[in-house]
Image (cartoon, one colour):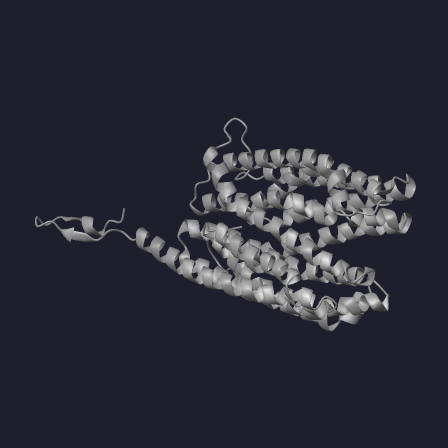
Length: 468
């Protein structure tokens, strides 16, 4: 995809929509895992699978964030038309992916039992939860290869092929779930093995597509791990990864508060959360489009186009998410019955949908602006703003304001839109100030130096105009 020239809307949509569909598809496949266990096993097995979600996200978020750095670095090379060394960036990215996967494999298997005990997983569920997590983490190298491979393809505007990989892997996952659980009676171990196999398939597919791409494919005789690329990838990706970790911790705090309302609140809130995911995948997709498009154009010096990209992605994300979030919120009673018929659980679900889902378009403000800042090379600031505004603020709220009204579910849920407004305002202001300054500096440095007459009829450079 040529991100540097031509109309933007069609290209942005071709980039963002497959990415959003990939997230939704992944969520549906994850739901299928739980559904198969629910159909053929008891509630303990289903609880064992569900109890691992927050821990898995907490452990992989750091390394998933690093893949953002890969997208930006390759996009910058394309924007500057420096394509010769891209194969070394790709090679470096895959080394990071393999190292990350190996580390996660060892850590995940080692800490499974003690950490799940610390999370107060019930004794009757704990053995199954530990087995599931330990087998699941065997697939971490494959999952990291897929995540980094998808990031590499995104850097050149290709979001369709990762979707194809995910679709094939997801179908295999569901088929193996049914085989291992329904036929071979392998319970949670069968579900975990099916996930590992599916991760391996997606990894192989994404590597195949990269090696078929002339710009991206690794040239083993020329490709090297280069220190400057490692530093740049970590400089961009590490803040995003740390942001994801703190985000997960804040969600754990809120979930703990939800648990205090009982199993009906847990069930209803969890059911409503599915619809929030579906909306947020579109927010995330347009945010990643912002990162990639602006990275290329900023590196190429197309600053006016960078501004257009920001505005287009912001408006597109707001339009899509407003329609989706309000549709789900206004039709709450109808949609929530897809997951539950328990009236008490539905009551809690509707409260969450009213307070949270009806404002799910607000994260566009900080995600798109944060993506734009990362695209121009400022990754730490958006991470800090998000950590303070959407993470720490929620934790403080739970342990202060909510403590005054511990029986009011509305008070707990209202912190979501409050944190979104605070974070969005700070991020938009930061983007406005920093982008104006950086675009101005870059534009001035790109201007040719003034020429003056040297008194002999020759035009020479005026040394006063040079900016070193």
